[in-house]
Length: 215
Image (cartoon, rainbow, N blue to C red; front, top):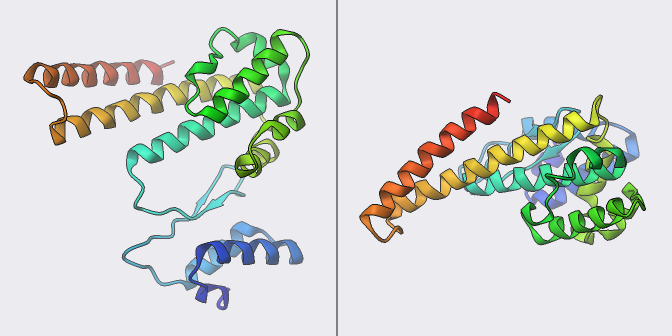
């Protein structure tokens, strides 16, 4: 850990830790934790350790990301979870098909995957996690594989998907609220009346958040 703590390049550091963890069959999370203890904090960059519910996911995050970017990343992750779990358990689809709208997914790849899943399951062909991974871009295949292997082990698959759908709604509302705040602060709304409309929309969104959290 002392030697690794001297590696400044974060990409190299992650590669070294993965290799050592694999060679010696030890936890990557514990390796990261020990290395971070040895490193001194920097003003321009904060290495933040985040471990998921299974204590296996470790990420290094740059504080320069805006809150809106963080929320967008949460939305993308939750969509990937839903896509993955539906491929693991096709039976979920019949319960959510009325709200499984391909156009509502946040980016082009997720929309494409949602369309593929819908086409397969509507025609009763079925789709497997392996087929999903074959359709995913090389850039994101590793993340989908991690979600399938580490997160798609739920006591109640339908409940897990519905929970993520609700989380996505909440995060989309939060993202819109951040956009409204930015528009009001920098004056990008063109007229006085527009400002009042944005403020009212913000209030309405706040009420919707309360409603969704009580579901």
